[in-house]
Amino acid sequence: MRQKTTSIVLTKAEAALRHIEAAIVAFDRNLFDVAITLAGAAEGMAPDPSTASLFEAFRNHPLIITDGVERKKWIGFLDAERNWLKHTGPEHPPTMVIDQTAAVIMLVRAISKAQPAFGFQSEAIEAFRDWVIENVDAV
Image (cartoon, rainbow, N blue to C red):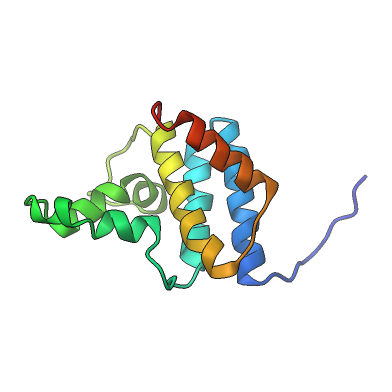
């Protein structure tokens, strides 16, 4: 039997990397809700990067904002699955379709924010990045 550990000490960088790698494992198992939750937490652990993260690029995209899409509505669209998984209330329906694309976007957001901020790399992130590049048209 494995010995139980009662506590661990982590830096934010270590925790973010662990969350991202666990999110990739969940993604590979089609547990898209789990992948979104873990990746969203990792994204939130990272300080604001000196360069724009993927989410910031989406959130502030001038063509989207100037085409009449209200900024608040656009951000709500980008965060819909993550917010539904985190919150309850009348604005959140009782069910939601959570698909592969939403999980990919959340993972890419987390990696694009946390990786430059913390400077980590892993085989899991590289394999996921390769998969995204190979499957971008299907996603």
